[in-house]
Image 1 (tube, one colour):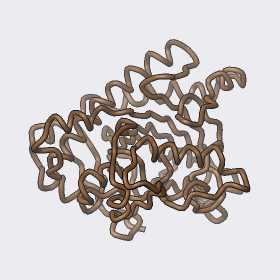
Image 2: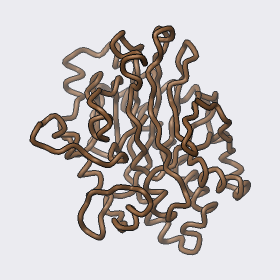
Image 3: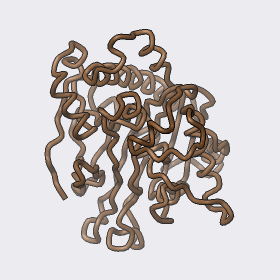
Length: 329
């Protein structure tokens, strides 16, 4: 397991057009980096995170039921511990994600109270702005949309998703010696994913990313946001931008206590009408199972959610492609 360095880029520098060469080298060889100087610090992230964690800990069963979304076509509201299984969807096993979640999008949201709604809505809007600026810098460095601002603005008509994901200390049956991962390997169906992670209290580094065929540890770095490039960036850049595979590891026995991990994850996803060539996507290593020559992002996501709602039914085939988990760590 490597701990090779992951570069840190200042968003203010990137917005000025600085460090383009270094950014291109990073997204084309690693597909991830840390972002600093984006407008606020960890205190703001912690405020939004704590509102969610308080609900996880103190919300009643009735309140959680009222905030749970039964519509599998979108992620909204509360998902209880082990309610999701990235392993099943990606055909990498049958173990659950050892986490619970709260999710919001542009519309159709459910919140437990007005304070939660106000804090999360403001946070969502601010992270959205950071994500747009980040994508602008990444696409500029990769030479994508540089000659067509109108097309870029159309592409940036997005449908983002924000998720708080809490990984509690694992029980004995979920330690690394028995179930090595709390979330199975996958890459994101997003343009970019912004991750604000608060590290495990005992120092265990749970997020691992594959770079050049080697797993590297990705620790929490104070006052930065981790940027992971997603499959959509890989498509629009014709493979110039990588979409790295990543997973959340379970701790070994001696680090099980104090291994809880919290992350705020913002998926900048394109509009559902975003269209791409299925054969070209497959050439890039994205094993899209849609049979038509052209597909929309909505169809791709819809296929994913179909698997989410049916993966426990024995007469339904499992997903075969690794990238079909929409929401990651």
